[in-house]
Length: 278
Image 1 (cartoon, rainbow, N blue to C red):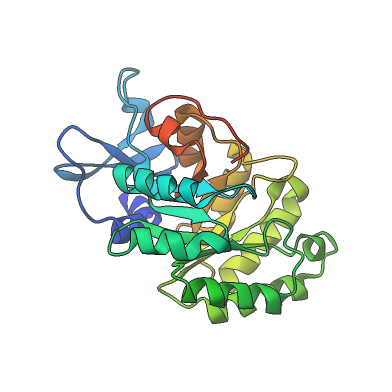
Image 2 (image 1 turned 30 degrees about the horizontal axis):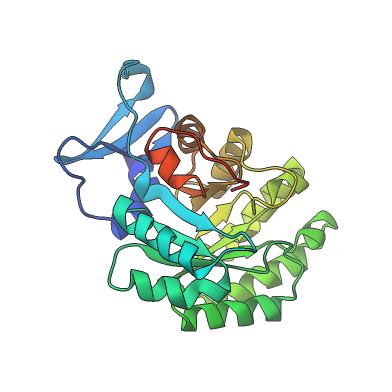
């Protein structure tokens, strides 16, 4: 069981190799009822069936993309977002492209990454426009790009267009930059979700992601589990949309998520409940 857990957590451990302080236990990955934990002494794995009711909550901070994508976002709010990400050790901040230069400047020389979105939130831009957005965002300092699937093409079964979209973005977002695709799972049926995940894996994308947070639904455990099953242990799965408390965040990780897109990040790591669509 340790090998799949190590595969799932490879990106996290590579990005955030420092062990947590004494008394903090991080949950890094879950598979088949087992969890990979990290504390000040190193890694250990356990089946959840052997974990007592009094154990936890565990620190999920290294898995969290601290997100602010509302159209009315201000520079002051982005500054506060970055300060929170640095304080809590989140994986990244995720902001609209306008705010990438500010976020990147505030996070420079830190382990917290700058993430942005392209083709957001509809996914209906041409591949060339998405690619141009991604190129500009990287020039401005973005290290991670969350692109929105060409949803209409997927619904029409036009898998050639979906493949070209993925390939165009992968060409302009080379490793070590991270490329995720947002499926908007609430708009797809099971077969469509599976096919998109297959194409993402074949195109060499780094993550599949559930939702924009701006459509008719967000992340579900069932969708995360389906996506994990299709992409296998070497791609990331990002759950986003409607995750507002620790219990829901934990459920997504146990279903197979290795990244969480949250606007309620601080509330979640403090054990409370946040508000908002993301």
